[in-house]
Image 1: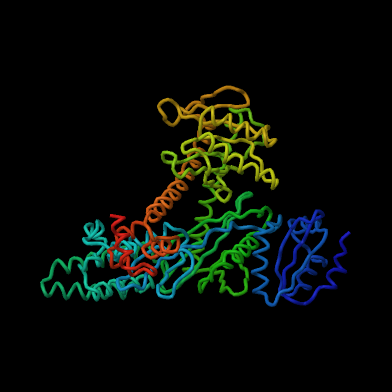
Image 2: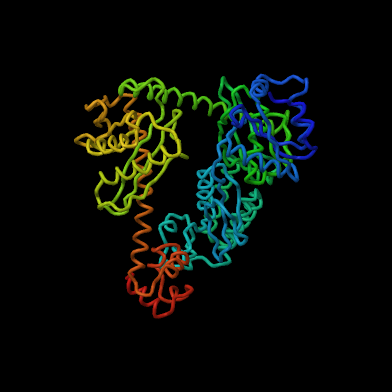
Length: 587
């Protein structure tokens, strides 16, 4: 029996992290504390706790603590432990990739680009944005108004004539000298002012130039400035949500409907609404909105610095974050916008769940699967005439595609084009590991192929002791049209053709198409890498280091192919004679 009072007495008055464990040593809850003794002790005093906390405390068999040097260090450790242990009573938000930024590079003719990851001092970055689409939308706007280049350096440095973007008035073609460095720099400066929220300054600059051009009867130039001013005025009406144009803020609203909790994050950068994103936490059943918001803020801002202002729908406090919970004014309007977004996201999730539940139920009935069956894994093999064979495994579980569980397999040591051998290899590699690591066994395995591939799958599973898993082949019909698929049921020794409108067939098509897409992406990447390597490998005097140096310097084989001899000779380790040899080989 866990003696809470004795345990608390021995705790230090230091910042740190505590882990509440169940009878089997499983993590129930991970928390941080400014003072471990006070925080852990608060769970076991006489004050009332909510039903969720009371239920957790009834399962606690032991507690472990780790003292830290500061509360900030405790926050980092807490988040790492939450991610690695996934405790039952911690509200968990999915660990997404880093957020994207819009970059303005530091070149003589700066480039607009999408950026994710580490930053370089010579470039300027604006953001973050909630998703890649929001960045690309801003890039398109800047192209339309300021006509800055977006091409990669390898393309820019080797163009001899303007590209299509210049022809459709989306770029001023600095690559071919159609705009002076000074004029281009002025366009860049205006674009940066716009990104900083100083759009009135930009419009003022352009209006003065428009009037000057008009007075000097340069009417075509004046019309171009007029079009820029109009475009920016439309943006002001559509995107600006703050009278103080320079503000950077995140707006975080939580809505709980039934058993579904949703947090909507609205991002405002330089006074502009750049987009929003909805998050659905795990383990939030029975939690209050304030708990959900606090968990979101603590996990969301571990990987990135918070903006100057965070507006929340709940009155919470998180160290290091300037949080307000407004009752009126502009910022209250922002919260209402975020709440509406969250409600819409919940409604969509309910619709999606209903659709997926119906599809899964229909599939279970059609294939005779047990009532609880829900995990489906699907395999596909992709290659070009046997070259660079890649197999994919995608996972459908809990009524949605589980992208973090997808896997690709580079197929080796099989005869090129032998799909049977490739399928055998991927299934052996997949399920040998699942068996060895006691991983999740699927209820259904879909094979994108015919009877031969299905028989191989059944044989591999039988050898591994997984003969209870249902295997179904998805063979294309005679005309290879969606809806004509023939299902090969290995265990029943028969085939089945569902109606094109059958909900179960729609689920199979969804999963099969995703496996196909995932395999093709992997195959193309492997094939491109293999062809690049092979072309350079054939050149005498080019070893692994020089090959790597060329690829990095020019950004890929296309860049090397487009380079002049003088440019190739500038690469470290490449002499002039070798540069001439490389150029001749590639041309």
